[in-house]
Length: 152
Image (cartoon, rainbow, N blue to C red; front, side, top):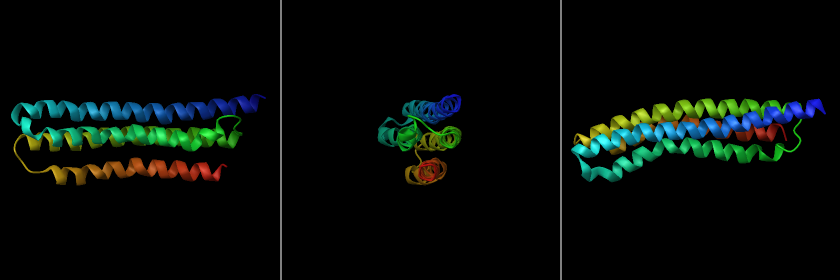
């Protein structure tokens, strides 16, 4: 009974980290890029579409955390110790990596937004550069999938 409870607690902490930190990451990332957008609109209000796309991009990490939750959801009823530990590990992985990816991606986006506001044509190049931190966030989804198949 005690082992089952410990495994369940570990699994739920993992899910909380997974969804919670990824959601916080998106909130921080979109706010950083959004602040840059507000400043850029003062100089160039006509590029709002570009600002909107670049401000929304760091919001994807929260979605990745939610997707990962669905991958491990079936193990949350009565996990073994291995499953509980694996979900805790996946939660740490997804939460921390997505937090870092969103913050640094938002900084790339914010610089691109500022440059667009100053009249430079850098939207496409900014999207390409912003894809690099996104890749690591996507890898957490793949890792969670692999973890969930191994512990099944």
